[in-house]
Amino acid sequence: MGVFKAAAIQMRSGESPERNAVDLERLVREAASLGATYIQTPEMTGALIRDKEARAASFTSEDKDIVVSTARKLASELGVFLHIGSTAILRADGKLANRALLFGPDGATLATYDKIHMFDVDLDNGESWRESAAYEPGTEAVVTDIDGARLGFAVCYDLRFPQLFRAEALAGADLLSVPAAFTRQTGEAHWHVLLRARAIENGAYVVAAAQGGLHEDGRETYGHSLIVDPWGRIIAEAAHAEPGVIVAEIDTAQSSAARKKIPNLKNARDFAVNAGTAEAPRLRGAAS
Image (cartoon, rainbow, N blue to C red; front, side):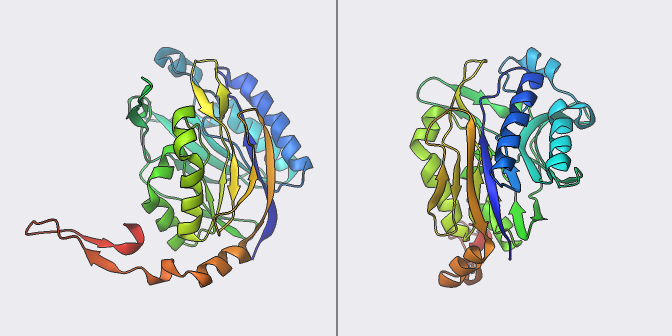
């Protein structure tokens, strides 16, 4: 079992990857000084750029990206697991990925995850988003080992798809990540309850580093980075939208204890859906 300190970094990323990398370094160093050995940053750590042409001009391949190189250097220097919640990466096929990257204490890339669910929505306040117009969705859930824990990956809008987190929990994840850039409107409505629900449903810790405040490109994000324990209790929160760091202790024995008290991962059963048709799909209860 693992016992360690986790940190969620709250940012207000602008349109310059270079300036954001400077902010990233300052906040990661602060988190490490507080004793965190697993440090997570928000979705789109590298830049938030709404304009399509400006976005295309700013982003580059993983081997040339300044956030990737900065994070690799910091992880090695500080001896921490540094999880870039996501940043835009130019793929070899010319398409963009909304990609999470995890660097180990030696600076090596331990895992990457491309956001699966694209934020294509029209909100009541007139905001309209079509993430699929800019990014190629991922197709694979990812779980990997860190510091005695099993980490499951997700990014922002993935939070609304519980089957992803259930699949990762069944693969052994006892720490779930939800780096995000939630809009202020959706954050006020659903952020806390969804994060607590994912923790409770899966008997897992949830670490959710967020973007917060009014950004250079005009969007406004909710902030309120959270760390939630496997019983659904909020154990750390940035109760605002300002940049900063929150830290909490992770003890994976608490995940095992929660799953023993309510063994819903073990008790899930296959079932059929009767939708009034001749052929109904069979679904697994654990992923329904």
